[in-house]
Length: 257
Image (cartoon, rainbow, N blue to C red; front, side, top):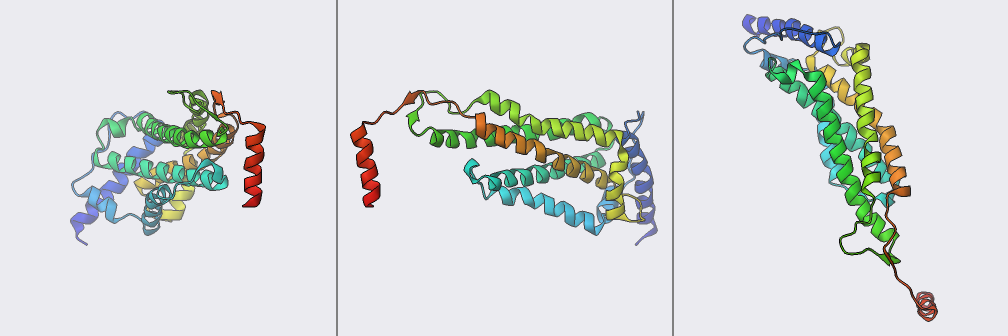
């Protein structure tokens, strides 16, 4: 390894790490440390092996789980899928955002990170949750009210219930993000695990943000799931009535089969 590369690497570790620490603790900074030429490449090459593996695992969890969709009737299967997707997406978005702050370390992305990052995490997960439950409830509510039918243009779910219950996930993310900012020691276990005695890698902070916020969404996701199962469906507009003779014939047919 050349001496020039080592100097760039050392400057990156000392300069950028200090610059981010000020942002993470909420202290105002007037300037953002400018990375020396080649520092980004050095940062990528110096990523701890365990951190690289952990990031790659989270990157692939969401696509794999999304390829195996389950409906609301599957119970714990649907809920577990949503929890895994939430955790994977939050770590992915947080780490990608961290990479942007490194590449554009003098832009608004880096200087206003504590405003933009939670907005990105909250907005993306809320949209994801709303669309997921909207589509799932459409099928679920139609089957639940199969003894009736809905008027043309009517929807079988209550969008107000979906909006409120899916907001529990963003609320959990917001509260947890504030906690991480107020208590930066919550990042220390990740620095110790991934970096040991070495200088903490900048992306470890973003990984920890994604991890903690992902864990925080589990309770909100559970509450959202069970609440929408209970009160997320609209009653059918029209009830299908059958004669007693028709009902008896249907039961006789099932018995004969």
